[in-house]
Image (cartoon, rainbow, N blue to C red; front, side, top):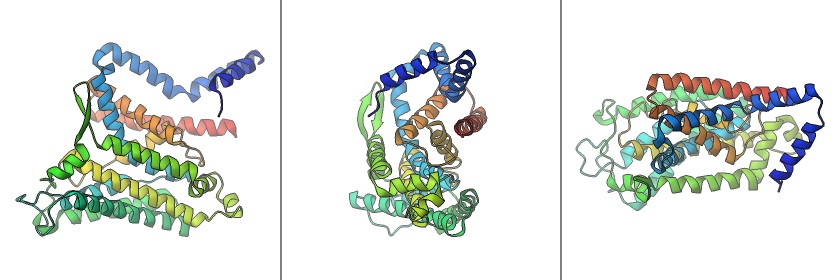
Length: 360
């Protein structure tokens, strides 16, 4: 394990030995490469001064809750980015799976229940529903991976296509049994308790169970990325697919499995989001893939491929949610949040590419 203190000392020694021009270049690169983190630090200080409650225990609890909700999609989409791709269908997949979970887990006596003959909601039925929506997400992800790997299509085109197809399925689904596009509500108390049930409190804020589920998911993804042959193959393909193929890596199946795993993560996200929202509409999950992509890039998952860490993804989600929490506390309207979100993605990608070009 590397010693961070020794690394800092080594960097300081190297810096002292540089001439004036090299020192200037080194400082410029250091500032530009860490510009987002520097600006974030300044922004946090400013927000804390303007809104002292920003650094309260309750505010921290709300941040943890939001991170737990948005992290699963980021963990899924990160694998696609490691392969130098992306996934525009993530939000719609989570919306579809949220709708499916909501319909399967409505109250037995709910007046507007879409399917009246479903069994009573209990622990086994909740587990079966979770497996079903994860499987739905995985199947759509498998389709994405197949077309990317088999026909060498760019993931942007493939996932844009499946995004539109999935949205069409969502609209069709919401029109079944005379529902006529109305939001799916009347979710069972068992489902909501399974997801939102209080574990403990931080300040005056109840921390729900899905925070624990997110921790378990982080552990699973870390093992997959760092301790399995599949994880090593994923990074090898992302770094150089041709070299990986020569080395004996099955590029086709690695690509397919990365997208399948991503789809499964989106399915899980939909299951959680259904209970969180309490009412699932056709636009549930809209544009959430943008947040996930931004968080991944901020966290060091590079679009040039072969680079990324689970810890970085977590940090990226924390930073992004921290920014949005702060902006909300400062009274920034929702329309401006979209502008800021787009600017963050653009700047993060530009800085990522700059790092790559400097190394090259």
